[in-house]
Length: 514
Image: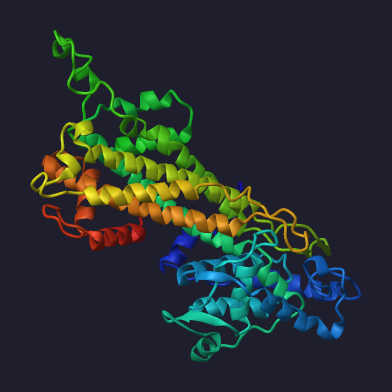
């Protein structure tokens, strides 16, 4: 989207504020006015017409007309019949973001949703009543029908919900908060469940966390170059500027910024380009070029960063779009039937994102292996062992965890986007599986925080062994200090899983990002 954004355009930075409790979502008067106009137009326009979702059945049963006396109950039937998801429930934080995304798109004024439903949804968010939404359900083609039906079930006062960090009946939560459930009108049931807000809400969280992973992966890779006293040219402006990819150039720039005030890196003009240094030598004990996991960081993380930026653009467009059907247009005084609820945009981006994040975890794992393997680094004891070799085992057990978790990421990175299965009486004959894609991307992102935690412990351990803290850049010292707040120097063999869990939690709460 180009030009100036509307004042109520929902951006990823807004979602981050809502997610972390730094910002409160408020339904704007401008949003409510648009919605009222849309609802009033549709109420009048729908008289003496057959309009899908108002006076017809749903899906392949749209050919059946529903009598006037049953129209209100039709909307309740739709919600109740589709609230049949399975699996673990989404977290309260994820549910909150999904509710905000749904409210934001309905408030665009293209859905004909009654103002009462919007106000009720906003009051649920304010009072932190988050209906339970199972992970497994809709196929993402009429949107997230099943997941959003569970959200709608809560709005009509049924089912269960998170309230004050407990799972209670929605009825109990409403009584405690002194608010009433939504009263459905016109096509409210359909507008609540017909859209991509579940997959999109999950996608926004994935992106926020991927930004954090990118920050720490670039920083960790920078410190890796310091630990090995690498040459500076692999992330130089001159080398990376010779390739036109903006992501690669940006990552190289971040590495230069991270390492700007350290004094352990080498310049080739002082070593291999120095005649006095190389005079008479036929074999060089130091590597002429570092391993790829050290010198190809801009080329590896660069495309992941570009993929992140594209996904951010697409997801922000989706959460600010009318992803309903039909589309109600008060300006042209018409109703348009189509497929704006189809989730292919989100499904495709989440598949690409998880592939990128998996590659990031693979880079982390290779850098861990470099530090662990004394035959590769020729510098550190095996497995960064600060005890007695053979009697103590250092970080050997942690490496197993990083390897197995990376392997799981590689398996999870098979695309969901191309796994369409026709269903719904073949009415939905090609579908997106968008929420499945977002959930699998979430698993990959979460796994990668675990691999990153092991890597950061290994880096801190290597700094202690090398006793190089004072020589490192400010950014590298800051990273070391961050790690040591969660896990101490490892000299003896004892369980470290609680320290790893603390470190992962601190990483997830970090406000750092690219």
